[in-house]
Image 1 (cartoon, one colour):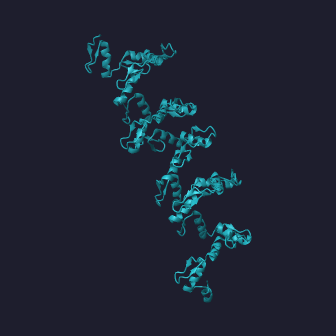
Image 2: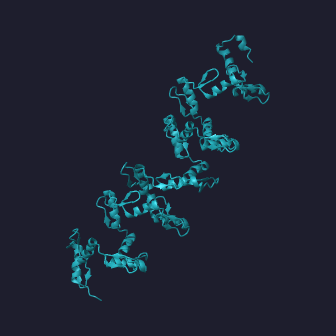
Image 3: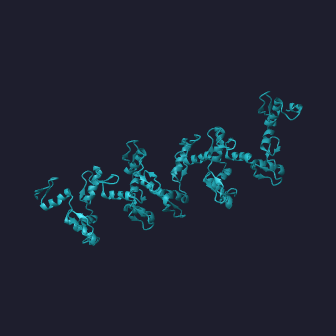
Length: 547
């Protein structure tokens, strides 16, 4: 065995040759006496300078006999040859994992020791690898040296560029061995694999929730810490995940790299593209366990499940009314603000919701592409056709929880529920009178404006609301659509029919508070009460003889 008689005074390491000890001492002194004449980089050993020199000359004298790949150093060739031989001579003493390079083993060992010897001089964040530190430093410098040749987007590290390029190529090189599902990223495959094993070895110390991979745990922990380390340079908005920041940045750039192969519509997120593609395929993979109803999105399923649970987690700060989903809350809040953010480009009419605007727009085009197969009636929007079809099927899927009355439309149910709650969310700005329906408020406002938009073509008389206009037209047409089932007498108004029906039932629902006399209709009661107040316009004998 070779004697190591030359010992370092600093670390007591022994060497067989004095020249080796001299080279070693430079580690402690920092001395680098060998300088490259081209770039002025310094080295502790002459052999290192010689290797470095090959970078400038481009010389690669060491060639692999298997694949003819050339290298500037013999050590690099030896490492490369292990690809062909499969040799992994460096083994971790902790977990027995083997590696083809000693440097890779050293990096791996830091997983077990937790050592992070490379520190950023700007923010003091530490890293286990110099390459990771270099990529991190580009956050501070803004450097993005790797550019996509297809779309010219730049990236701070090569691995992110390669992942991005798969968007354009559609390549998914990482395949699950159990179900053959393919992924564009190895991390996505790793996240997927525990679906088959059910293993979740990473547990949150705060809430005991378990995760299949450490990255998911790290993201989850930010829920508790509130940490949002990823900041947008344009608007300073912060995010807990880098991926969420990337998606957000497309708001500023307008980039939509994900394109539907069926209709060429573009999207800023892959998840949005996948949801869109289900429009073409009709796929509804998310099924309610209670009623077996299927949905194309998990978010829609979650909202639906609240029908069964009764959960309403979104509450209006103005009136304390609760809702099962955020979008309904936002629509409701517009009632209080009076804002109508959706405007028609043709006539500038504004609407509370985008769906109301879409329904309105075919007024200008006249287009009605949705046809009822039963009666051939056409509609401008699919939702109107769906509502109409319930006329034929008799379906009333929306039920009041108070009185169990059913309705064909959710809007009609909501209006009905205000009978029980007494809610009147629509307020007149002139006289502060409140109404349960926006349509009733609009009719009421015409009292103040004097507007009468409905005009009779026969006599030119105008009306402030459509129902009064329709009733008036029956004077000219002679139409009496309301018929008594007892005596077949017909009436032009439903209120007249109700009054008439009390003749048969002898029902007297309207009672005088003064003398207790009852009447079959409110108008007769009002006329009677003038006996007591003395304000009747007729002779007392006529009023006294009222039935």
